[in-house]
Image 1 (cartoon, rainbow, N blue to C red):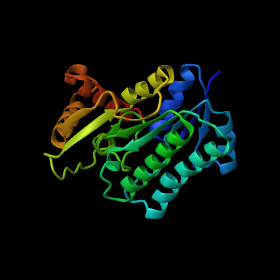
Image 2: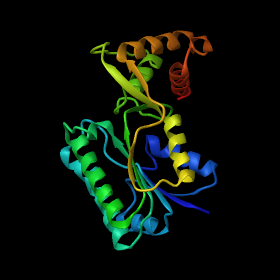
Image 3: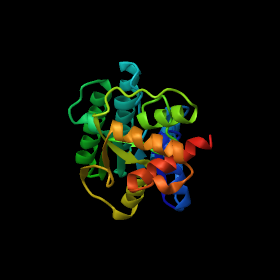
Length: 244
């Protein structure tokens, strides 16, 4: 059975990926905040494939937290793999903010990318770096780093929704679509170091997102509000918050 290491296994993306991997018959090695460096070492020795999803994403986190959780953890993984003379394939969840970093989040994600690029060059390992846009979907925490999750939570709990600029354009990726991208990599056997974007991305303004959410809030569970792929995914996400 193939051993898949998932760092950040308890997070939004990680938990969804773990569930999908298990349902597809993979053996999952989970690593999270509560695990030790020694436990990580054991997982690295066993892993046939690594999804490195762990990292700090909260905008109010300290610079030290970004460095430790993003740059530091990635360097630890890369250095240990090289010490063990391993060339295990790695998929890394980076961000579009790493393209032109303007804050500690973007800077530490870019530094993590550089560590993985070095690993790929040094070991001929396959490295896939996803530069993710804004993510949404079932299981995403409200009041954390997702506008959609926060708005849905507020609507469901009859709280005010604040929109600072309706005209701002956003690119959104649904968790279920991204998980399918991850699963596809396990069978496609990619080579070299590649930067990828999710296969399905929805460009939409914040105003249009809110208008659609408000309509869903009024009409759910009536599916008549669903008119396209984005509204279908938003509808499913909204219903998941009603169950909480």
